[in-house]
Amino acid sequence: MYIFSSFRSRNGCSPGDCGCCGQDSGPVVGKPLLGVNHCVGHIEMGRLVTVAKNPTVLYVSGGNTQVIAYSEHLLKVRTISNDPSPGYNIEQMGQKLIELPYTVKGMDVSFSGILSHIEDVAHRMLSAGDCTPEDLCFSLQETLFAMLVEITERAMAHTSSSEALIVGGVGCNERLQEMMGIMCRERSAQLFATDERFCIDNGAMIAQAGWEMFQSGQITALEDSWITQRQVEVTWRD
Image (tube, rainbow, N blue to C red; front, side, top):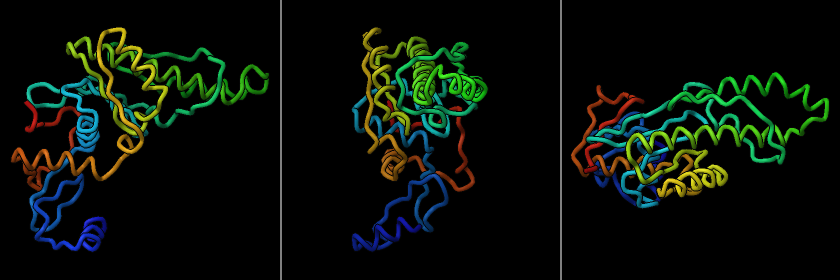
């Protein structure tokens, strides 16, 4: 409500000028509610900016990790990790690559083992001079990103996809974009990615997804404004 009131005061508009309200919480009284799934907001902003048509999506952030594909008016999660997410672990320094646990089973990934391993060996390795803190961070990033690239490629093969889109806060990491780009080139696919202006959480992505919903006539009843992570109805795409 503070954002809405601030927008009104800056632009000289009244509540009547608002056609609908797209957000991931409560409605503006008297206006149609568009219950925007936060993840869908990231995806639609990425599609708008990059002009990707029907990509396999790697959604990677400090909160969660998902590989998502669109089929028959549904965005379906192909894989999801409930372990600590990459955004929780990643740093961008270091030069020495240290072997770390690598846990990928099909399209499932687990990050908890690698974090526990780091916590277990870090003090001993640092005290012995076997590596630097930067080396550990570098190795952690490289290993996690390799796992993400592998499951995304597997999802692309499963869906016969020729496009990949990276969204979410960690998606603006240039090393992740580089590794994903290598994978896409090797399979003659195209990578789409953006920078921190669009990857990091922002109100515009909710507004964009809400606008698409409103244009297609998809309105959310308040009692139905809960969120599912497994699949989301998408009425505005062919």
